[in-house]
Figure 1 (spheres, rainbow, N blue to C red):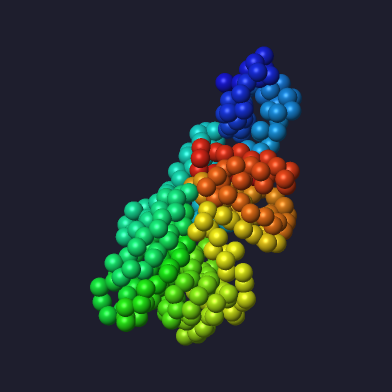
Figure 2 (cartoon, rainbow, N blue to C red):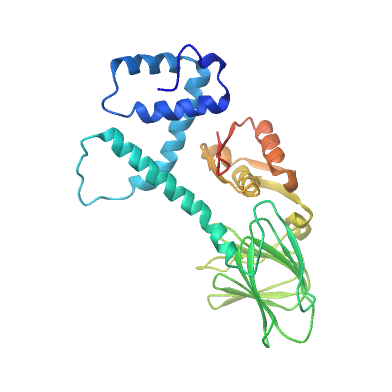
Length: 313
């Protein structure tokens, strides 16, 4: 094994996490020797080592949850369970990385796209201003009698130029008919959203329609179109200027947005903590610093795993 009881007091944090991963894999083997058990016990006695190991165990439990729900028709134990664990871990890791890369593949196939942490201002052929938020993608078709934009991923802001043709934004199965000029459309995990700053828009979804006036928002998904709400539209669209401004918003939501701006996925180990309500303004152009400052104010620990996952406890 890599960890040595004589040297653990001087190891760097990254080395400690690697040692925890090595031990985590090895101690689950049925053929762990007595000498290895003693070595692990000595390594685990150090508080920082024990903490790194405990965090890895919690993270593994988070990954295991979907697998526990899968019912297998037949189970045949392998002769070497340590190898089975290693194979399972590799499969889960590769599957997780593929899921993380799917949004990138979607952006590659779109007309206009931004990478994580990037915002982009575009002047379209009809003089409409299009602003794309971080990790966003759109398809644009301005050639026909109806100008169309399809939001593939992320969030956009439009200041529509009038040229006599209708302007429609498609998001999932819904349509946003533009009757005014300035508004934003966004896609999230469990809902889509339209926020209007100026003019009018009509949102149609599943046979239902909602008309928005300035300072209003509507959320929806494939099953429902919610009631219109009065909101602070300027605050909700502050991302255009690189600001995330929140007021009494669940902590999990803010952490996810700051992690997303770094191109990473959030793993929050304490759901109760995630329900805390927070307010503040965060610099999206320095999302890593904003995340660190928020974690410090909320007494949280953050671990960035290979730039892909941000583990918060």
